[in-house]
Image (tube, rainbow, N blue to C red; front, side):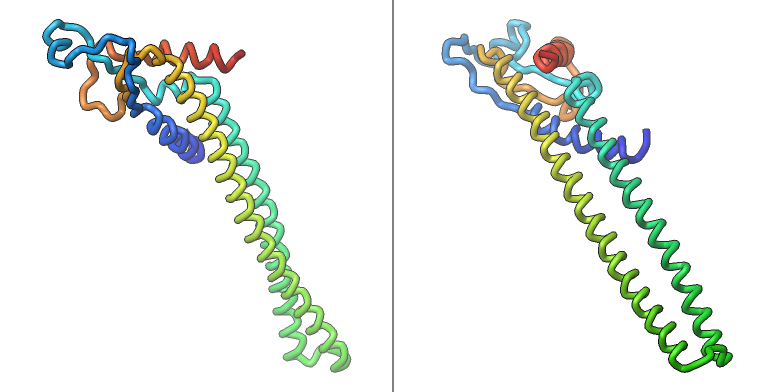
Length: 208
């Protein structure tokens, strides 16, 4: 797994983790029972557990969001790298011209003072152009970074809205008082994991 994949999945994972520590108000019509009574009876508590990693790997929207972010990051990187390399070549050529000018000046190789001054003016203009291009490159870097952050925020919000809307619909009858991400649990207890059911329903809704 490359660095950008880890970054993107970490971003989306953080968004999903925030969703799965959700408290639900039980449906007024639903039967309420004391936790001690439920435990004593051997029944499950009104709690559900969802595996965040599985959501990110198998929910189509999360997979597509991750791929889209990686593609945007890679395109931006290529664009910046191409411009940076081009500017580097121009800078290297400029340095050679400056050194050549200095050698000619020291050797009195210019045919006239006007010729030397003309070359000096050309180099000064080239230097200003390079500085402007360097600033343009920095501006582009900032713009692409901002664009990536905005796209990330939009996709994260879309993912949050999608999962949150489903969970509220899923728990409309108040069967669960609490839905947890299993990453916050020290120990896993059988019978509480509803990950597969949630992923299947999310994909069914999304594919519509």
